[in-house]
Length: 140
Length: 184
Image 1 (tube, rainbow over the protein chains, first blue to last red):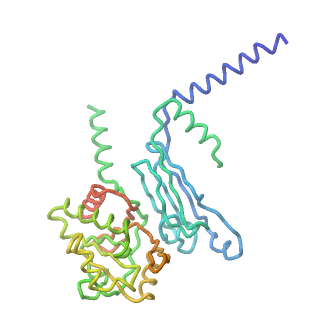
Image 2: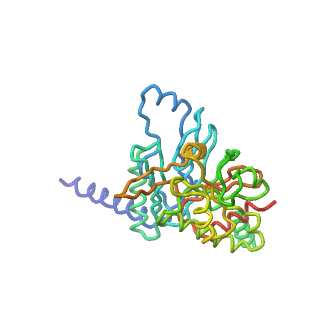
């Protein structure tokens, strides 16, 4: 019982410290690009019956941190990827400057639509904390 | 002083960066032959030496097309003398209603220099396929409308597809990018 209190205080202090750091430390990013790739062999795998999802229905970007969408077609055939038709080996780089939801027709999706949600730069501690938590939980 | 130089460098770099999405490497824009709203055959290759803004839509479009065309007309005005080197080409997705005369009249309400393209269903479908454009007809009562790709392509003087401008970008953004692409 005696040991539990200092451990609890330590854990609570660490948690408060982590939350404080996440909220107060400015967000920096080595690259502002969010990259999606069509790997080589995708078309062949689709022809063989594999249901491959390369692009999520919703892509979230953040102004000033990660606000450039990059699509790369590394396959051997032309692909309609995101909003555009891309040749083998071609890439498409689309920067965003205004926070908004952008809808693109995309034949790669069952819904036929891709939404890019561009959010404002996280200015406040609460926004920074939320952004960091979301990044932490983002599937890799 | 170093800070000022750095700021100027980033300002210059930003100025040279297109607001539109860019292709790397750029590919040659597929050519096509359609009926032009000016009465002549419409071929992209006729406009080599000019910067072409290529869009797809239809004259009965309630929102997207009028917005894009009005934006393009405004951007051309901003370019001043350079506007003569920019050609807007708008290809219809609705050949049933959009004949040559109707396209001409409609486009002239935005800018008389705009050229429209129409053709048979098959011709237009082939052009859309080459450019990755979708157009889905949606019936509504006795009438119909289209859900279609709303972006425009920026095709440089050599006929290379350099960029894709998403719907909703401002006239300032268009003028910014057109100026960059017009540079020798």
